[in-house]
Structure formats: structure tokens, C-alpha cells
Length: 68
Image 1 (cartoon, rainbow, N blue to C red):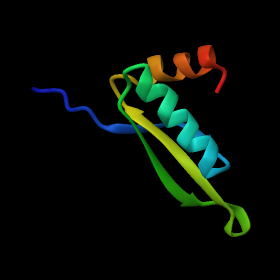
Image 2: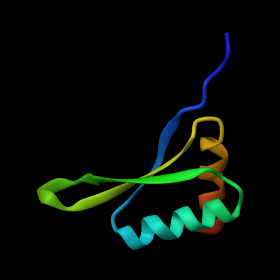
Image 3: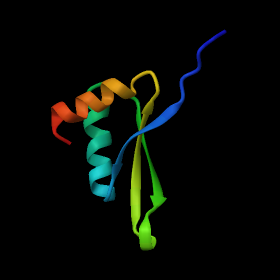
Image 4: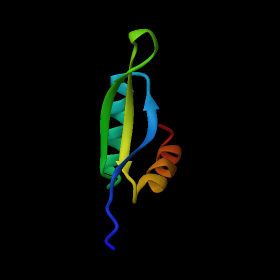
């Protein structure tokens, strides 16, 4: 059976600016990354940072290394 890649949340950003910064840095490192806006508490907007399931662990490690 063929294994299918899917998107998983690797981080929650509390501003669009931070979400875009994280996406840019991870993309520069070669990761496939997407962001998705979701509603937070009391209508505050938060952003999910998504990576392919096959890259999620490495992408999170890279975030720590890049300090984002």
C-alpha cells in the first residue's frame, strides 16, 4: 500500500507577521510549508503552521535551530 503525505500542524503563531516569517524561513531551508488562519479565543486570529507529515519532525527541529 502506498503511503500518502498529508499536512500536519507543527506550530501555532499568534500573528500573521510571525506566521509569514516562519513560513519564509522554513521554505528557504527547503521545507514545504503552508499557513492557515483559524479563530482563536474571543475572536483573536491565530495561524497554524503546517508541514508535510514526512517533514514535520525535521521542520520543528529546524524551527528550534532558527529560533523562530
